[in-house]
Length: 374
Image 1 (cartoon, rainbow, N blue to C red):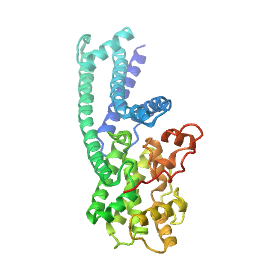
Image 2 (cartoon, rainbow, N blue to C red):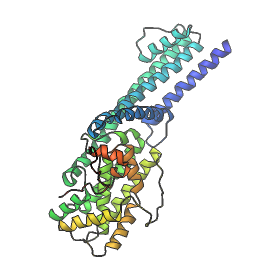
Image 3 (cartoon, one colour):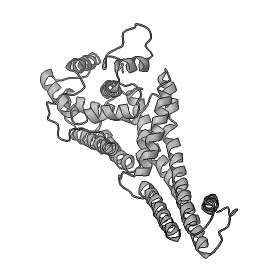
Image 4 (tube, rainbow, N blue to C red):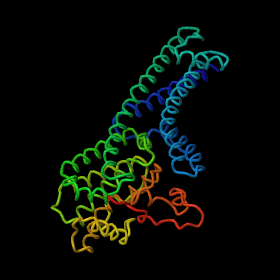
C-alpha cells in the first residue's frame, strides 16, 4: 500500500506540472504551439455553442450566441487549469497519507484557493499545500496577464476593421473602395496598403500565438476580421489586374502579407491548403462574377484596362494565393455574409437562412448578392 501511495503521489505531481506547463505554453510562450488541454477546452466549448447557434434562424441571433463562445472558452480554460491542479494535488495528498480520499481533495481545494479551511496535517502535506497555493496564485496571475493582452490585440484588430467600414461599407466591398478611390483621389495610396500590410503582420503574430482571437467576433454583427481581410486583398488584386492606374508596389506586398498571414492562421487551425498553387489553378470566383464587377466599376467611372482576358488571368493569379484559406476561415468563424469570402463557405440551405430568404424565393448565387454602390 505504501508503494502504491508513493506512485500516486508522484503521478499527481507529474499531472500538476503538466497542467502548469499547459498554462505557460498557452499564455507565456510567444509562438504558435498546440496545447492538448487548451485545444480540448476550446473544441468542446465550440461544439456546444455551435450546436445551440444552429437552432437560430436569423444570423443576428447566431452571432449573439457565438459572440460568447471565445470568452466562455477562456473562462472554462482557467477553470480547467484550476480543476486539474486541484485533482492532481488531491492525488498527492492521498499519496502522502491523507485519508479518506475525500479529505485529500478537500485539503487540495483549500490549499489552491488559499482559504485554509482544511489545514494540512504534517510537514510533507504542509510542503504540498504551500506548493499548491503558490501554483494557484500563479494561475490567477497568468489569467490576469492573459486577458489584457487578448483584448489589446482585439482592439487593434477591430480599429482597422471599423475604419475599413467607413470606406468599404458593411459588408466591405472592393467595388466601393475602388469607386471611392476614383471619387476621393488617392484613398488607396502606398501608405494605405502599407498600413494594411502591418495589420496583417500583427494579426499573424497575435492570432497564432493566442488562438482564441480567431473566434472573437466584432462588436457589430455585420463585421468580421475575415471579411475585412478578403475585401482588402480583393481590392489590391483588382487594382493590380484590371484598374488602369499607375502600379502601386505596396499593393502587391500587401497581398503577400495577407496570404502569408492567412496561411499561418490556417496552419494553427489545421486547415489544409496548397502552399504553392499554380497561377491558373481554379478559384472560387467565376469569370462571370469578375466581369460583373468590371461592369460596375466602369459604370462608376473607374478606368479599366481593355484586355479583360489578361486582367482575369492576373486577378486569378493573385487570388489563388489566398482563395482557399480565406473561404475556409470564413466558414470556421461563421463570418457574416459577404461577397467573395463568407458566401463561398455556405451551402444553398445555409445561404437561404443567412440571407433570410423564405418560401420558394430564389436564393441569390454567390457573388451576385451585390457589392453595392459607392
